[in-house]
Image (cartoon, rainbow, N blue to C red):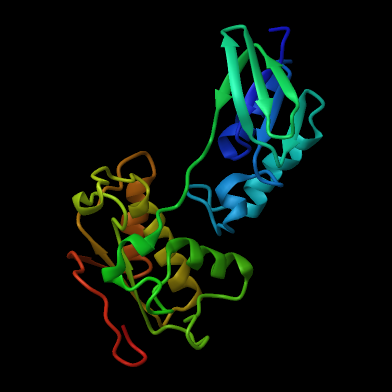
Amino acid sequence: MNQPILIVGGGPAGLAAAHSLARVGQKSVLVEKEDRLGGAPILSGYAKLVPSGEWAKDAIGGMVDRVEKEPLVEVRKGVRVDAFDGSPGKFSATLSDGSTVEAGATILTTGFTHFDSLNKPEWGFGLFPDVVTTTQVEQMISSGKGVRCPSDGRKPQRVAILLCVGSRDRQIGREWCSKICCTVSANMAMEIREELPDCHVYIYYMDIRTFGLYETKYYWKSQEEFKVKYIKARIAEVTSNGEKL
C-alpha cells in the first residue's frame, strides 16, 4: 500500500500493529491521545503481566522503544482524531492539532477504561481508605514500595479480593464477564503472598472462569504453592470495625 496506515491508539495493540507493519515495509502513522505510548499497562503502572511474568514497564517499554525508533512509523502523541472521512484506500483524518493524515487504511486500537468502583458503593471504595482497586495494588507493587494499608502504611495481615466487580452485574447493566479478572486476581494474590508470606489472602468469587491455554495454571498454582484461599460467595457489603474491614 502506497499510503500509510493510520493506527489510532498507542497501547499494546497499536504498538504491535505498527511494529508488524514496519516488518513488512509498510509505513504507518500512530496517533495517541496521551503524551506517552504504552496504554494502560504503562499509564496505570501495572506490575507483572500474565502469562509472561515480565514487568509491564520492561515488556511494554521495549515495544515503545522499538516503535519510536522505527523509521517507518510516524508517532503523533498528545492528539486525538476529531474528524474522519473517506473510503477504503483513501481515508482522511483530521487531528485535534489541526493537521490532516491521509491513509489507505485505518486500525482502531483504542484500548479500554477501568471500571469506576465508586459505582458499587456497598463495597466501600471511596469510603474506607483500605478498600482499593486491583490497579492500585499493581501500582504499590510496581513502585517497589510494597503492598501497604493506605490508611496508616502498615503491612496487611489479611487481604480479601472480590471478583466480578463491575461485571456480571445486572444492577449496573453490565451482564458480561470480563474474562480476565480471575487470572489477574490469582496472579496478584501470588504477588502479595510472595512479598508478604505471613499475609492470609482470600479470593471471593461467583464462578472461577480461568479458561484458556495458561489461565487454569494460575488458579491451581495460587492454591497449591501460595496457599491462597478461594471462597465461593457474593459479598453483600463491606463495613469497618476499627482497623479491620
